[in-house]
Structures are given as C-alpha cells and as structure tokens.
Image (cartoon, rainbow, N blue to C red; front, side, top):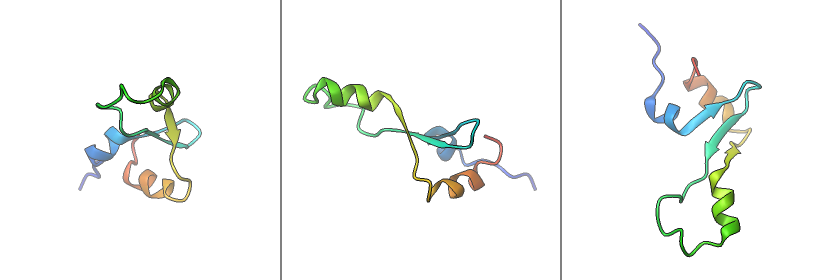
Length: 64
C-alpha cells in the first residue's frame, strides 16, 4: 500500500533543505487593522516549528 502524505499537514508545514520545519504564523485573516505595523510585518514571515515536535511532522511527510 502506498504511503500518502496527509494534505492538511502539507499545507501547513514546509521542510527546508537542512531539515527545519517551518510554519506560517496564525491570525492573518482578518482584524489586522488594529495591529501595529510591527506585528503585521512579523506575521508575514514563517517561523521555525518546535524542535521537539518536528520529528513527528517529518515522519508524516515522507516526500516533502
């Protein structure tokens, strides 16, 4: 049986060349007018996922 990547994971996480797991910061959809410009800029960047939980994500995403 073929091993398939859960699509919900592949849309939320990205594994870099060196093996780090990146995630997009939450809360970008609406109600952003009240945020300061600094907060808005920080939300645009991806952040590294916890090193403790990263192996679980990598195990579920064998092809990415």
